[in-house]
Image 1: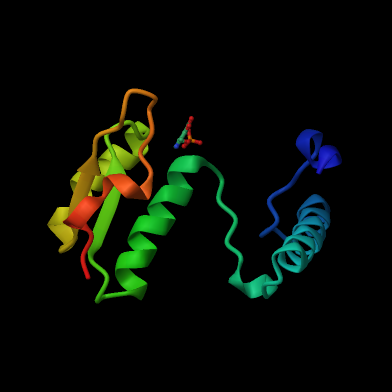
Image 2: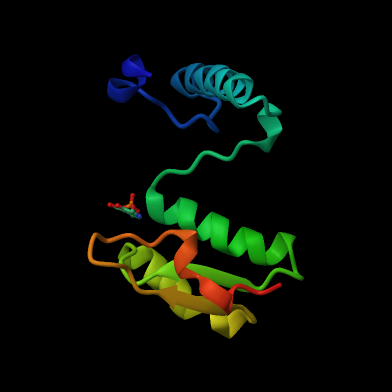
Length: 116
Ligand SMILES: Cc1ncc(COP(=O)(O)O)c(C=O)c1O
């Protein structure tokens, strides 16, 4: 990836740097897919954490209409809190767990609150 930190082009563009960038992206996609034993088409790259979180939350609601309960913690990033505020307006239930004295918020804290 190192060369692309200083001279990357829009991989969706037809100009020379864009075509080079697209080739690098295809190469990276194939390498990551092989590492994950996944199909390259199953991978989605995001430009930032907030974009990835939106992709995950909104994608889950769209892809799994029967799954409408998010469980998160009170100590997540503001980008998660924004989605937690958004989700109930789109038919999702949200459980926000507190954390213990060490900041722990493992699945044992869910108790009986997870849906069957
Ligand atoms: C845990 C966590 N989630 C989400 C984000 C948001 O990422 P971004 O600023 O890349 O959108 C950050 C950013 O620091 C983060 O630390």
